[in-house]
Length: 324
Image (cartoon, rainbow, N blue to C red; front, side, top):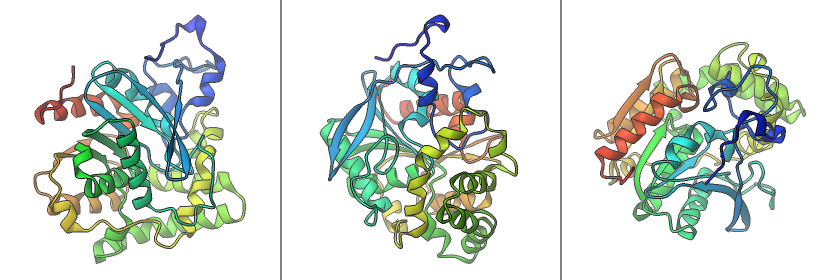
């Protein structure tokens, strides 16, 4: 179990472990909050490593009971879920890990074979080795897509899915509405960001993508302690920009055939491309439950953690998960 430290007992080094995450004001949303001039963070996060298909994945695990596994999106790692650690570990078995090619995992290859389907297989191996199935998978953005790959390929390892605005690029490219929504984001943010990263301008790359998702000026308004940390995972973006086939397709039929209960979480201020995907998802699987959180964008679990957490607990209880 993690140790929540008193204000006088906090190690300043823990602030360096605040997640590399696209979330304006994220530090202020940590459980218990923090003073605006504080230089410390509230948690010890002891991690372990597990070997998975030629690489090692860092993860942490707290609590007992029904297994819940958190899957982060881009620019992030296992530390993205600090707002979920305390409430979930008090009521279930809480596991968060860093995907391959994300901090602090080693790069043991050039990433040329990386794809979302491979990340899904990594997650399946992690569940198997930790004997954590059937688990609830909670994923954000690309992490939601990866959780979906795992559920489709290994349904026996999954109890239920909580998907916060999954990013399924092939779906956007398959319809006129999707292509238009993706084109808006691609023109204003994605393609310019790729050019900046290739030129070695990591911060400009992150700024363009962040502002494209959260609005102009979002990155520059980040707390200064966050900016260096969002860069921890910027190298992985090159794989997303340059690898043909990185975004493995998810067939509508496989979504329709999912035997698991699904909760889709959305922010009402997110770019249009995400609502196009969630609307398509609900059409393919009409039993999907949906939650729209007001006043937040694509990183809804981190900007509205209390509402998100309570909605997930209610969803789990509705579907028979033994949460305390």
